[in-house]
Image 1 (cartoon, helix red, strand yellow):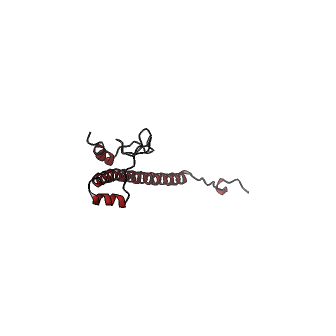
Image 2 (image 1 turned 180 degrees about the vertical axis):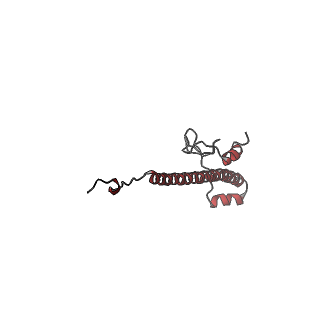
Image 3 (image 1 turned 120 degrees about the horizontal axis):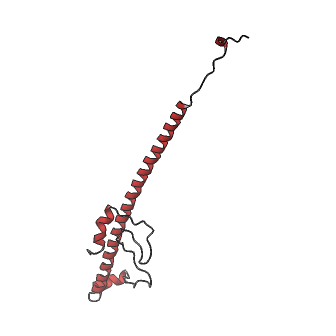
Length: 140
């Protein structure tokens, strides 16, 4: 064994730069994908909330129309025998509201909650609530 520098083993150096760059790019892609998926989910939730609020306003309108129709039928039943026969056949009656409870009506935020109770939905405005809320107030 000679101590000749040309015959000594050359040491191999390994740079960790390339694996770290690949790992960083991979994490970046995963974070970007997560962000895009989260934004899409948020948009879907907002669309569903708007559809729910729209359906709620429609339900309140239908409920008011049905109540008016029943009141009209009962008023007419006092004088018209045909209306009385319909009211008797289907047992149409107006019950007074239970004490301490109030029907659900949309408030200015577009959510629905009994008076005195906080709504579980956040008070966030949207296109539907801004468009429908003035009509629900009666034009005030």
